[in-house]
Image (cartoon, rainbow, N blue to C red; front, side, top):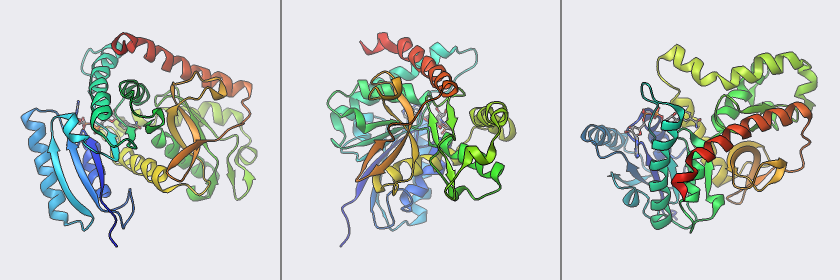
Length: 329
Ligand code: NAI
C-alpha cells in the first residue's frame, strides 16, 4: 500500500542549495524510495526570485519523479509551512558589502522570527526543522524561541557538513574509506570556531587518535582545515558550497527520520545543559537517531584542550544570542 505523502517545506528554494536539494528530495533520497512527498516551496516575493522558482518547478515536473505527488510555490511562510512534516530553512540574507556581523544577525533574526512564528501556527506538531541558512545555529535558536507551541527538540541546526568534511579529512589522512570511520563528533557553532573531535573515533575497531598520534596535526592542520573549508571552496569555485551543503541536509533529515543504527552523527540541537553547555543554546553535539528521535551521546570525557575549544565556540554562540536578545523580547 502506498504511504501517505509527507509535506516538505523548503525556503530559499530558488537558491543554489535549493537547486542541489529539491531533485534529491523528490527522488526519494531523503525520506525513502517508498515515501511520496509534497514540496511546499518558499521564496521572497521579489518577481525575479518567484520566476526563478517557477523555472525550478518546471524542471522538477520534467523529471517526472514518481514520488513527487505535488508541489506549490509560496511567498508567505504560513502557507509554505502549512501542515509541514519537515521544514528545511535554507533561505537567509547573505552578508552584503560593508555589512557588519551584527547587521547580518539582525536581518536574519527578523527572517527567522517570522518563520518561527509561522511554523508555530501552521506546521505539523511533529515538524522536524533543519536550519541551514547562516548563521545557522542562532537562526535555529531564534526560530525555536519564536515557536512556543512546538517542542524545542523539533528544531535543529546543520552541523552535518562540518561532520562530513571532518570525516573525509580523516579518511584521507588514514588512507582508508570514509565509511569505516565511526564515532566522530563536531562540537559547537557552524562557523570556523567549531571543534571537530576525533578522540573517540574508531576505524576497524582501532582508535583513530592512536593511529594518527600527532597532536600538532590535529591542532595545526585538521581543525583549521575543517573550520576554513567553506572559505577554501569559495576561493576555488567562486561560489559557496551548495551541492555538499544540500547533501548534508539530506543526510541530516534522513538519519533523523530513519535512524543511524547506532552510528554517531553531529546535529546542532538545543542543549540540555550537559557538557556544561547552557540549556537551550543550539550547539553541535554527537547524537544517534532511533525511532524518529535523536539522542545525545552522553558521558564523554572532556579533556582540557577540548574544554578550551568547546568554550571558544560557545562564547561565539553566547555573543550571537545576546546580539539578538532584544528582538526576542
Ligand atoms: P543563495 O543566495 O543561492 O540562495 C538563497 C535563497 O534564499 C535566494 O533565492 C533568496 O531569494 C532566498 N531567500 C532569502 N531570504 C528568504 C526568505 N526570508 N524566505 C525565503 N527565501 C529567502 O544561497 P545558498 O548558496 O543557497 O545558501 C543559502 C544559505 O545556506 C546561506 O545562508 C548560506 O550561508 C547557508 N549555508 C549553510 C551551510 C551550513 O553548513 N549550515 C553550508 C552552506 C551554506
